[in-house]
Image 1 (tube, rainbow, N blue to C red):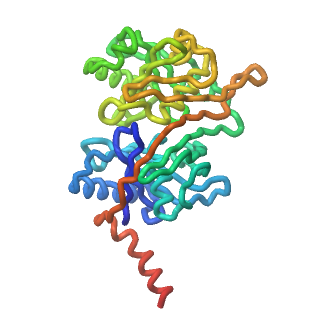
Image 2: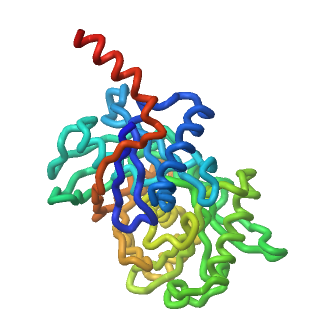
Image 3: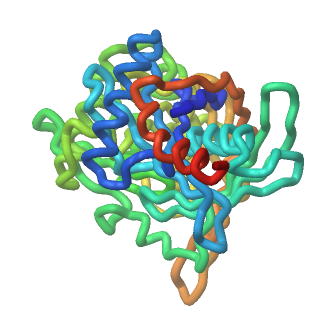
Length: 348
């Protein structure tokens, strides 16, 4: 099987893109095949590749590409989490699909509609620019029809009290793009953005424990990676600062799904991000989010209808993808043997 490696700038690691048509459909045989692929990658020096995108042309008339995300867990080649999605990996998948003919060649203004099989998300990915080796995108998370923001709250409430090491910590559990647990400055035991972006192992460990408490509260596996966790604090001038934990360390910027979830949470009164935005004097429209790796702009279309707030779409722009190349994954070569035999039989 041919694997394709692409990197979305700002992501913790590259994404391995594989054609789902050549892999088993059942969960256990599929994960066994991906385990072999990870072992092969590790032997070749690719142990750091912890994101896998499975793609194929969509049979649905509204979509161009079916996409399934697999989060590989560090330290165990057979460890995976299939609960959530990854926006950066979606863009890597599109780039690889266009390179291999699964999609047409990309050009400015082109839009690729992606069906996220993990969680049912509908994405419209707009190509902004194409240069040698690099593609620029804007991603739109679509809700059609618009979704009441109350349905994005995993506990049905803007804030939830977690028991963290015997201490009560108020967080917001929100799911848009991916499920996130948002933590305030006081919950993280920091004073503001400067301390947030410092190299503090104690802060990292505290966020990991808060994430674990949130997973336990939701009844989700402790060894998984969902919900994700991020701190949001006011940065002044209508901006907020955010920092998130990835696998297995700090996220260098903020996940695309994290930016989308944050944008949605800012539109839900009473949540931790909503309170941070109010303190920062955010007055609506696109919000600028400062991260350790730069700033990202997020626009969430939230409207009020029949006294209920609804979200129609979330846009995150200025994302870039670099395609590193393609290679034969020898341990998965047998999965394409049937296709080769069928091709030869037709030619005879």
